[in-house]
Length: 126
Image 1 (cartoon, rainbow, N blue to C red):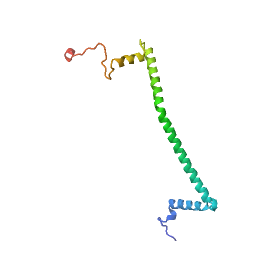
Image 2: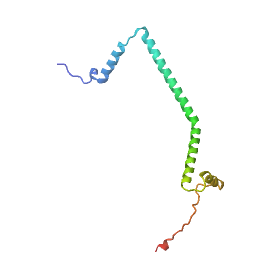
Image 3: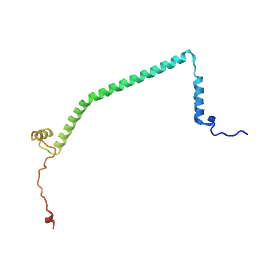
Image 4: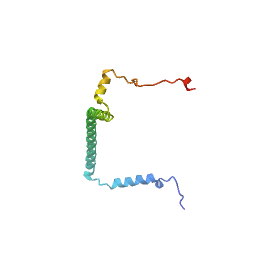
């Protein structure tokens, strides 16, 4: 009775898969045109990779070139939306006049909010 060897490579799934790949590789028609077809296939694949890379770079550059125009258009659209919002809120003057007024006064980031306010002391709470 033969003994079972767990380390036998013929029982290993990877070894069996490699053997199947070898047998399939041997079955491909070699012939005089086999190698030539393989070379043309690799050249075509390489050409497609180069064309795809060049197209990708072209569209990337076109996208970068269009960014300032798209930004300008979005800025104009945002200004228009703000002006409409100011008109809907019942403002007497448009958003452009308001920004021009602020810019002429030297608009700062942290402006004082105008209005009535009162500081309460802790002593008054008692």
